[in-house]
Image (cartoon, rainbow, N blue to C red; front, side):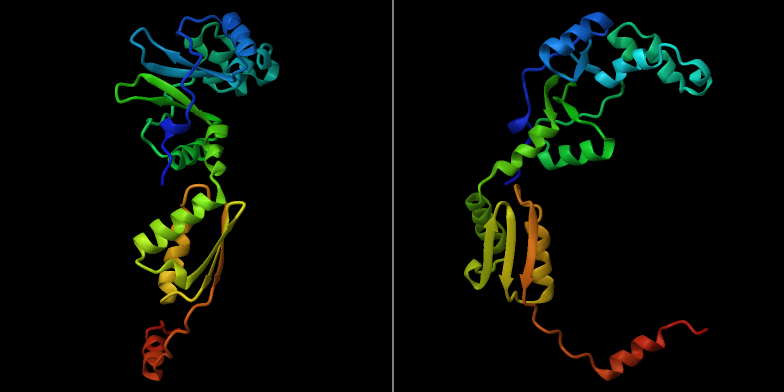
Length: 229
């Protein structure tokens, strides 16, 4: 089971137009206890995001002094900005309602952002997904996780009777034991289980069957392929 962004996102979003004033946004940030505003144009499409960091640029760089010549042009422009259009960051990294939460988490990590606007196929704002929303997937019970691993993964995908393997889940930590058909099957099961929603960690307690002995002639063939000094 893969949770979609639309299942955990916040749909009540405080947004502003490009002409919103600095003072108005500062007041709204405090009153609504949010840390960023999506910026929406007259057609209802997302055009940027103004965050607390964008707005703090004005205070931090009000008198840059000797640093003025070293500042990026964009930072200098934001320090002079007085509206959302001046201060916003664009283009914006977004996700779609149908995207997986795993995909959203990867984007947040890669782009070092705390939240992502959610937009529909026409670029209209549908919601916001935050780091807290992403972490909500770990609310799944151990019983739910175990059931998915046993029924959908081990039996459904690998066609293995779950009763032939040991499977325990505690606090989202999965422990797999027993003897898989071969080493490759065991490792493939472990890899797949790591991507089950709500799994915190996977402990490998499999007893792997020994590999067949390599023939001596095969060993010589491998050695013969090594480059000569």
